[in-house]
Each structure stands twice: as structure tokens, then as C-alpha cells.
Amino acid sequence: MTETQQGALSAAEGPGRDRGPVPVGSHDPPDGQEAAVLLEQARTSVDPELRRAVGSLPTSIRRIARHHFGWEHGDGTPAAGNTGKAIRPALVLAAAAALGGHRTTAVRAAAAVELVHNFTLLHDDVMDRDTTRRHRPTAWAVFGDAAAVLVGDSLQALAHRLLADDPHPASSSAAARLADCVVELCEGQHADTAMERRSPDGITLDEVLLMAEAKTGALLGCACALGALYAGADDADVEALDAFGREAGLAFQFIDDVIGIWGDPGRTGKPAGADLMARKKSLPVVAALTSGTPAAAELAELYRLPYRDGDLERTVLAVERAGGRDWAQQQAADRMARALDHLSRAVPDPGAAGGLLSLAEFVTRRSM
Image (cartoon, helix red, strand yellow):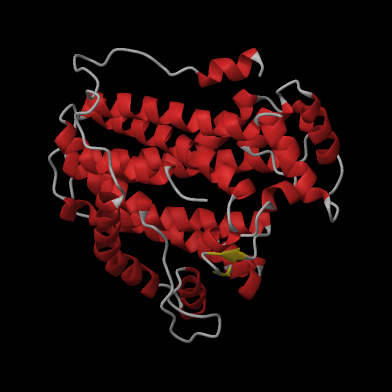
């Protein structure tokens, strides 16, 4: 492992403003039940707002959006599909509650964040050529590229309209923050696609970490910050919640990338190794490429050529032998430690922070 990798594994240390970190053992380790309740509550609260928003779209676009959310099949017949885990809306509502606000007042903000998330999914599926999501055909695979992109654009517009129409005093600040987040998301996605065209030995860990923060950490941070805004929190606490979400988002991305290579397609709903076949520079891959090991040289050689049948197993083994899997898992733990440090500054009471802690544990302890 290189010095850069070892440095990246170090936990960030630093004192809070004048509040100590959450004491070890002060909060019972989540068993997933509390997170499941929070996610179900978020779905129940936010789903009507999502359906109202999507229902306002023109008929042709609405049909594609309803397919994407799992409410209809491609032929327009009703479906009892899964709209997703609702992690981001749950973070908005949990952050509002943690800082003394009321979950109900932040429902529109939570729905806006979920609409932006789904805008990114629609566009990502087109760019990545993913044909399945949540065990269903993706929108572009059914309706075509242009339709999927335009529906994604429409969902982003709906998100901003939800906040513009919200009478809550924090809605204006929330709208500005969400708009900035969308720009950062686009920056991260652009960096990701640009990396695909670059030589496998020309990508640094710093670059891929910045890309991952923009693509994934930014929206989770924004979700937490919006909840804090709707609770009337001060600027310092809003920023601490944003930092908490960003670090938890990076931990999520590390685990997601590991699952993308070594996960069970029956659980993930996506083919195993799809990113490797597309020669994407995911976090474990870049860690492996920069490890300076013989396996790194083998991986770079594989990545210089288009994917060929039979290459997948060899590529997976090269990433693992070069330390990519272990590094990503260690990084996920490190990022969670940083996230909890930020959270303790804004919400020093472990009881009040419990919902956010449970959700953060949930997103980083998913089964493969």
C-alpha cells in the first residue's frame, strides 16, 4: 500500500466547537430496526408529495416518470414497484428532528431531495448504459435515451418548484443550497465520465475521492443540511450536518463500489461486475491501480483494453489482490468515524442524534 493510501486511511481528528464527541457506548448499536422504521416513515410521508409532483407533468412524460418510480409497468399498467429505500428523504426528516424541528414541516424539502436523486439516477443509467435498476428495466431501456434524459430534467424542475412553493421560512435558503448541490452533482458526474477516457495509470486517489464526494456525498450532505435549515438551526450546525452527510455519503459510496464488484445480483438488482466491464474507475479500482503491486500492473493492462468475454473473473481478482477491496472497506469505516465527529458537534445528545446514527449505520452496513 502506498503512502497516499495509508494517509487516506487515517481518521480525521479535530476538536468540536466546545462539545465533545459522542461517548463510546452512549448510544446502543443500531440493529437496523430503527432505520427501517425511519425509512418507512419517510416513504409514507414523502410518497404523496412525489405522486402529486409527478402527476403535474404532461401525460407523455408522466408515464415514463411513473415507470421509473415503479408505479407503472412500461405498458402503463399499474405496478406495485419499489420507489427506492428513501434514504435521502429520511435524512432530511431525521436531521430536522435531531435539531428540534418537526418532521412534518420538512416533507416538501425531503420530496425535493428525492426528486433530485431520481433525476441523477435517470441520467446515470443513460450514461452508464445500465439496463436494470431495482430489478426492473431502466427508463431509457424501455423508452429511449432522449425520453429518460428529459424526464430526469423534469424531475429536477419539480424539485425546485416544490421548494419555491413552500411557505416555510427556510425554503429560499434550501432552494439555493439544493441548486448548488445539483451543480456539484453534475461536476462529479462529468469528472466520472471524463475519467473513463483517461489512461488507467493516470488517475490519482485524490481525484477519485473528490469525484465521489461530488457525486454521492454532496446530496446526502445537502439532505442533512436541508433538515437542519427547516429546524431553524444556526449556520454552524447546518454546516456540521452537511459535513456529516458528506462523510456518510462517501462511506456509502465505498460500500456501494465494493458491492458493485463483489455483490450478489439477486440482492442488488444489477449485474455483478458491470462497472469493471465498462472499465469504470471506481474507488476500489483506483486504489488497486495506485497500489504499486504486481496485481496493479495486471489490472492496468486489462483496463487499457476493451472488455472481452472471460475477463471479468481475472479483473475482479486483480482488484482484490492489489488491495482495492480491503482499502475501500477500511475507508468506509474511517469516513463513518469522521461523520460521527461532525454529528457530535451539532447534536451532542446521543438520544437526539439516534435517528441520524441509525440511518448512517444502515447505508454503510448493507449486505452483499
